[in-house]
Length: 390
Image (cartoon, rainbow, N blue to C red; front, side, top):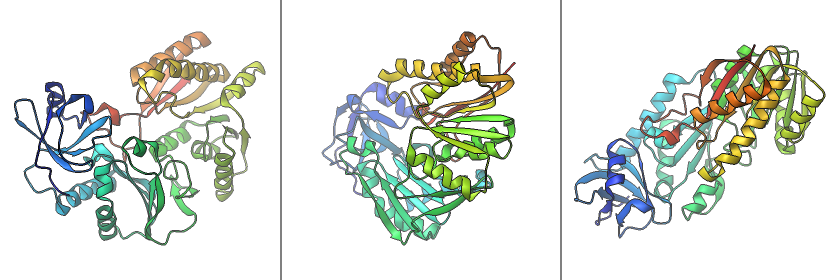
């Protein structure tokens, strides 16, 4: 990649954020832009022209600059290879009992806007900004050299690319992929469609929470928003029976396929709106020993937080009413804009309205292959709270 000659000048506020380790500068904090096209590496300076480092530049995105580093070393193949190796080494230290996990988590690995997931001997790649898109062939080359996968799939079909002025793309970047790839997670087998499945195939960020849910599970279980069966399959090994609900017929077809793959016979799947089902179950005075709530993000922007709070409260209130004494609720939020403090407030309000005393047994987050960068709260998005009703 080429280094633009003209530096980008950023506001004092942005400079302060960069100095504390935050990696983003928004377009509103760019005082004087660069002559570089989107995707170039630019030098970043403050209004006094003091150097701050180097960043990937995007003139169309709300996030104009994604910081790379303050290093004076050349930002070349060896530079990027070193960062990729560091990310791979971290996964070797923390990932166990699975061959499906996240290899690179973008900003958290100082590889902004780059996502790489591993599914056995297949890799899934997302380059979400012009800067990373320009490096796509390099990532393929490095991954083949360092890992030697059978195939690398491109899953650049996410909306954020459109905000960057990039086309949506899905396809094969390297090798000959299987039409469906089987992986194992916590001893449970899953079959994934890497070209058409949701996200890059599975919700890898919940992997460690699946295992924790299994440890608490007992009796009659309810899994809401089950998608391809991640929680349901883990619960089934410990529960008498599991009712798994999702509104998507395609998701339930995947979940049933995974259930058969593991020879499980105690899961009942229901295609329905979770809000409606919970309302009916409360009316019928049904009771469960274990309930999982893992909804999609209700708050995808700050403007959506108020409505999201109502949604999270409703499902948690009804779940608490459905639990037997000593029952377990594993409840999740993947809405970054609803932080942990706000989520706990929602749960406390739901418990009060349900007239239930509730203990927090664990406060959890995304799996360790999705590390949180301390200086970037945006990288902490998944909250998973394990509760017990007294």
